[in-house]
Amino acid sequence: MKKRAIVLGSAGSIGRNSLDVLRALADEWDVVGLATGSRWRVLAEQASRFSPEAVATADLNGANALEDAVGDRARVIAGQDAAVRLLDEVECDCVILAITGAASVPATLRAVELGRRVAVANKEALVMAGSIVVPLAKKTGATILPVDSEHSAIFQAMLAGRQSEVRRVFLTASGGPFLDWTDEQMAGITAEDALNHPTWNMGPKISIDSATMMNKALEIVEARWLFDLDADRIQVIVHPEAIIHSMVEFCDGSIIAQMGTPDMRTPIQYALTYPRRRPCPSPALDLFSVGGLTLRPPDVDRFPALRVGYEVARRGGSAGAVMNAANEAAVSLFREKTIHYLDIARLTEAVVNDHTFIAGPTLDELLRADQWARDEVSRCTASC
Image 1: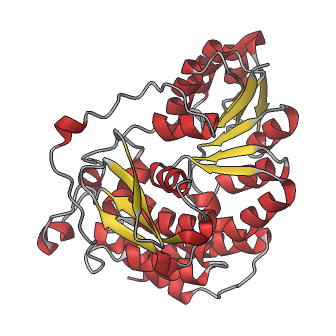
Image 2: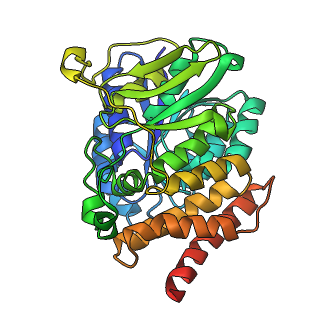
């Protein structure tokens, strides 16, 4: 019998890549549910190709148009809680979580509560609520598998030994488009500059996070929760070629690396087929064409977001929710040309340092911290 998959955030880059993989695995998987925020036209087209049992949209205004477009091919669920309702109403074996931002947290918690295999393709759910999600997964038996290429690489490399034998992990970072820019050049960076990533084709929010290296700060916190690691055992290393996706160092000095072409379909498929491997639609790596592989330490002074990530990983609690929300708010202001590129990390760090820390927050407290951080970024911006 074929397994059943739900893709949350199916209209985005990760969601579309997930559906590409699921199409290639059609002999093993059925797509039974799809959800997106407001891009109902994309959702309707996906429904016509995959014939899921239900589709979900957070956009009430587009719900009627979606129903007309989908017709009898799928049931439509609409509203802010549509993704959670989809999980409640459609049985599945795996949930691919490709919803971005804080909006991913309720759906993540529900998928974990239901004991599903949860392929986590975003960073925010664990950054915000890792202290709740991870213990809940242990209680319900849910399996959390990373889809982020770096964390998938760590997960795969860790299979070479025991958890107790891991000395540290190396999170590789491409360095983004401004790796070798001067301080003077960085002061004049525009949103258009930041969206021009040299390696990955990503959405605007993730592209800007890569440019500031805030994506790596978020990944430090995510790795802390996924792999139960102290912050000082997580090392960021700059690797512009993006061939080594991450590495694990064991207590005997052995370093195991996972390598491959920079294609998100590989970690997506591994999360679906684990512990087995299947032929993948992503192109194979031609080692003879790679040439050299560069590895260098990051410049924390030029990319202060990394400093914030390490501090948040050490503190845990409410700090992750505040960092994530402050960064989201700052990135939005940068895209609106309200603040400068260098203000993104500066504002995020200031808001994290100023917030009232809660060591063991509830979900309601995390959501309040999230809203406070967004409001604080706006207040700080207005007062400058």
